[in-house]
Image 1 (tube, rainbow, N blue to C red):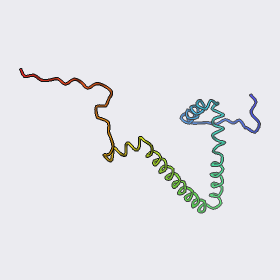
Image 2: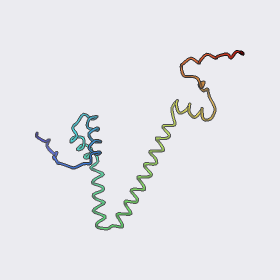
Image 3: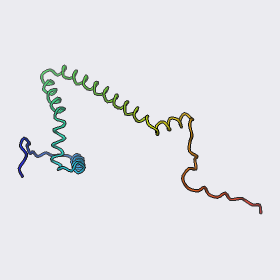
Image 4: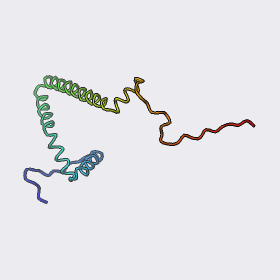
Amino acid sequence: MISEPGRVRTTISLDSEVYEIFKRMADISDVSISRCMGNWLAETADGAQFVTQKMVEVRKAPMDAMREFHLFADTSDDVVRSVVARAKEKGQTGPRAAAQRAARAGAGPSAPSSNTGLKSPAKTVSRGK
């Protein structure tokens, strides 16, 4: 098998759980596991390059690098909180969410509790003996 120009073939060891994750991703993407992992690594290379640069800085000036990592973590936390808040807001829109809010507030029409689509059982009349 001839590899594509610019691509390097390598062998790696993985935990079986990690392998299964990439196997499922490869199956869904209709590519080989090797291609799937290679694509994933290529897409995350900027992050790996950032971490590598920070590791170099840690060796040169440990305290300065740690302050930057803390700043990065705080910023990331703020971004994650913002994304979660927006997702929650989006989840609180639309007709279903509006109906849920109305039901919680006690407003608006509500379906009868026996609205199952089935007929209610006939009432039996008790007759005295």
